[in-house]
Image (cartoon, rainbow, N blue to C red; front, side, top):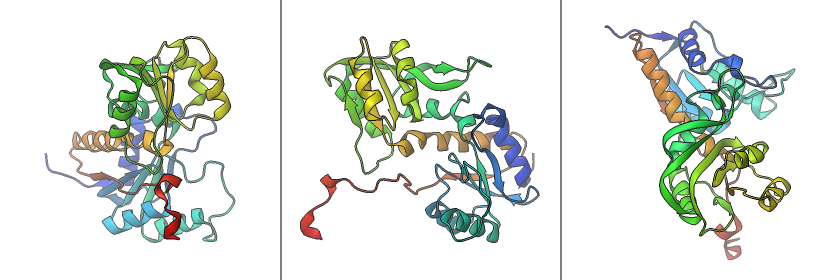
Length: 284
């Protein structure tokens, strides 16, 4: 079959077949943010955040479309004037003919989705199951539960997880006895402290997620039969999904004879850029 070019509408349709917008939370903002559905798409850049560094990379590579996990406008707006960083992003994208599409909570609950990629990145093997299954389809849902090939000390698993995730300024934080053996692991990409009790009910040995707050984590660690906790960077826990989404998009289009080049952004867009252990006061 001869290779044919793709329109933005065709790429968006493929993405929405993989990550149905109807799966998104009611408060979320997913789908096409800007772009002409009829424009040709040859290159797609995947990134976690729709920020200036990602736009720079997209323009430098000649991308026609950026797919991000996080929405640009989550709470809506009445202006896209270039007086704010979000407005400037919109102006640069439209001015250079680059579209922007978002798959957020619809990608979180997909099968496979964000947490499947996270689970594989930190060493889980075999079958995965949703930590909190969707009422509409129990194959989908938030988070994943799986197992390690063999039990290992919590500290060793934390080091394994750190090696499987992209490096950020801050280290992974651990709550629990680092010598405790763990094998059943629950994960949730992004902010996951709303699922602390769910991870405990799943009888996980350890729960890995991001953005754990002091009070929920402290109360969790006082409970009986609670899993240990590993708190990672929000950006890092969602980054593994990008390669999976890129592969699924390109293979789905290729099955219809459409060739699109996709790659994952090199930009580390985690908000935190340093820790005090990295800084030497004498250098200032």
